[in-house]
Length: 420
Picture 1 (tube, rainbow, N blue to C red):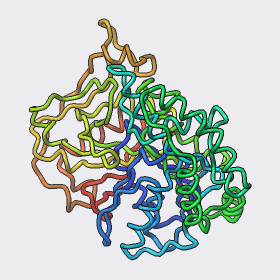
Picture 2: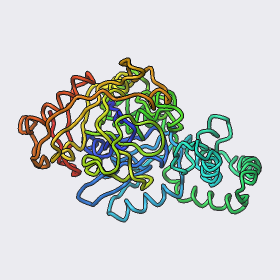
Picture 3: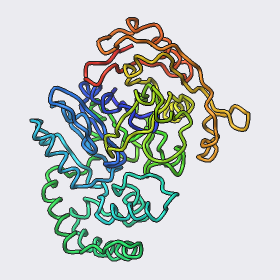
Picture 4: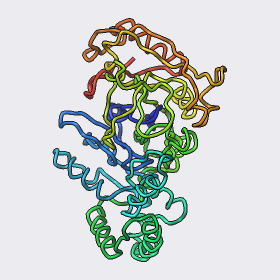
């Protein structure tokens, strides 16, 4: 620190929640700066297992102040439910959780439109979470968004009337049922009444903290391969998922970012549509071992061998200083492991950076094979105590990506980390 950004180097679900929880013990501020409740970070501690979608993962440390930045889109119903769950677990976050009044709201029509758009696309659907994220960001960019600031400034009712008039026309045209203005208005004023104590202007707080050399831990949602500009379009999310988005999403000046840590899962997974060259078919022994369920959607993740071609690209995009490799323990018991180090397209080796979704869908992975290991890694805390094949696997990641692996997750618990 003092300003550390944690970013996912793959398609999300890399284990960022564990990494953030690990580093948050040394932070004064832990902040989210992008996305919405289409992200899910799993945190396991002495209080239990928590799947967090909006509240920053550092909320479980009583010394941290947690910030929800203006770069987020917020579903108040989901946020209140999450706050209730955390409060019921015995965590006191009063005056420790602050919400940017500039943050945009996810409205009921956003969620309806998300589903209607996907259904209308048919086979061309992109596999969104249907939580209204894309439509909310689209409204933000097209000057149609509603923010907490509209309650503060007294413009919410008027702006809702205009937006609902527009959105109901689209909803009914696509076969949906029109929303009632008074019902939506009353519901959202009730949300605001409950969240008002937490809503504020974050810029003065952030800038004062920087001036006082406080330690900031910035929490990215989703993965770098889902970035609107640099991901495999159109199978991306609606906001920037790079470390640089902390500047617009929280008000952190670029020069103040001092460390960027990329989180990389020891194999590849993704949820939703889009090309995935190393994906393994159902029935493959490794595929069964990698089987996971997404924290946010509950959908079964697609899984395959570790693909380092895009990780090398996202490491350069973000300027990563170090990697945090998670779930190395999951690989135990496989006789052979593979890592994709490049792609071949039309008989030629090509870098990830030149491939769009159509090219990536036709690309063949170039693999390096590694001997597996049988040992249980969950109790190991020193790098040199890992089995030799596991050490070679980590060293291969460093060599291909060009970034040192400094942290290795060997289990879901907070303490199951090797610092290299």
